[in-house]
Amino acid sequence: MPLIPYVIEKSGREERAMDIYSRLLKDRIIFLGSQVNDEVANAIVAQLLFLQSEDPKSDIHLYVNSPGGSVTAGLAIYDTMQFVTCDVATYCIGQAASMGAVLLTAGAAGKRYALPNARIMIHQPLAGMEGTAEDIMIHAKEFKKVKQKLNHILIKHTGHPLEQVERDTDRDRFMTAEEALDYKLIDRVIEHMEPVAKTN
Image (cartoon, rainbow, N blue to C red; front, top):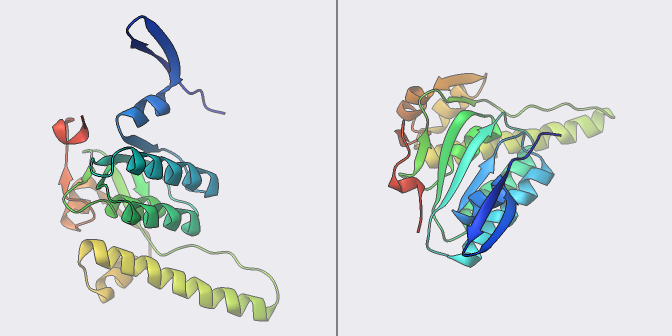
């Protein structure tokens, strides 16, 4: 289990310790720094909904450093990002691969960023199937629907035609931050924190 740093928060004469992620949440910052699974998705969805209830107008800042993971868990985060009234600004640090890349590009238009050495990767979803021949056919049909759903999300947020997205996601496609900018997965490559990354 990774060590989670704690910080001391001072308020007047009082001091209290809180984990670093809770402290970041006070500044409307959410961190996705792992594989996407149901547990991670539930925590991020809860944070999005909490920040929405705290202030439905101020931006939420989602930092992504993820190799991807469960499609259904990722779509739960994606749908909540679209559901809340706050703009969700996204930042890629390290990597945003597979479902991580989908969440990166799902940020509010004009507010999708990557740091200079970030790596982004898109591809078609992966699946392993077992069972009877009939079950495998059912799962294969569902897998095809999931693939189409993810492609249409990329189309929505990049503006690329279906044929291009299908071609580009047929195999792993790795991009630098600048290449992701050219591909319209992000809106800007940033080197230094600017006022846009902070809220009052």
